Image (cartoon, rainbow, N blue to C red):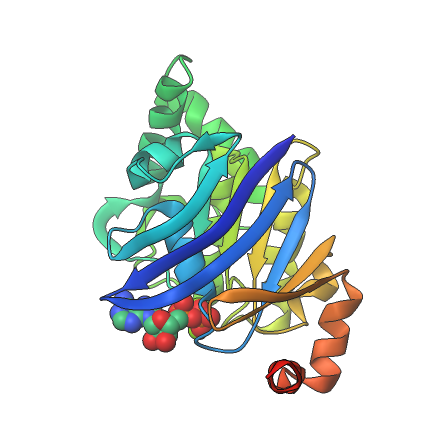
Length: 254
Ligand code: ADP
Ligand code: MG
Ligand code: MG
């Protein structure tokens, strides 16, 4: 029941190596957090996993449910159940949130060999999911993310996640720019969506989010590698001591 297995992954951005031999294994039912300084490569990892074209994989492997996904297009990975909640969700004027969600939902239904859902049934389904993120139905009629506050955008990402029921959800700094109430709503939403069958990868700068989304494992990323792994207490340690231990460890090695 391994959902994601990353082995010795290396990747470049614009010719510069950013990921430098990253290893990570996530099983079904697990919540993993990745912490680390700005620029350590956390977002790069999320983009490489979802197949962003600007990120060139130069070595290693990524298995999703036992299958190599590195040759798959981003939309194929999404259809296969890999979901990325963006740090900065895109605004798409002229496309209603409801239509966007229905198209995404039906693409997935089709991929799974299931029937497409009609407009009325879909509105019922979305109505249920709105409660998870405490969103007002009026958001469905608005253009996708246009004029949404930071918190509303993040809640909308979680709404997408609730509808698509991914097997692997990657949340990249879902807490950035959120006040404490929005943070709680978003975190509670995510917690409701964690099941024994799916896996969550939560990327964050701050320990605070992990008070609400409790990880089974916390990884520290530095210079494109995971340099330390621990339980949820590691996040508290980091909050207290910062990331200076990394340099000390590297110096000790040298
Ligand atoms: P984090 O998410 O941990 O803050 P990132 O993955 O965003 O780190 O960035 C890691 C490094 O890769 C940084 O030095 C950043 O400047 C560089 N980088 C990331 N994306 C790009 C890009 N599209 N073009 C050039 N450099 C990039
Ligand atoms: Mg950053
Ligand atoms: Mg980032």
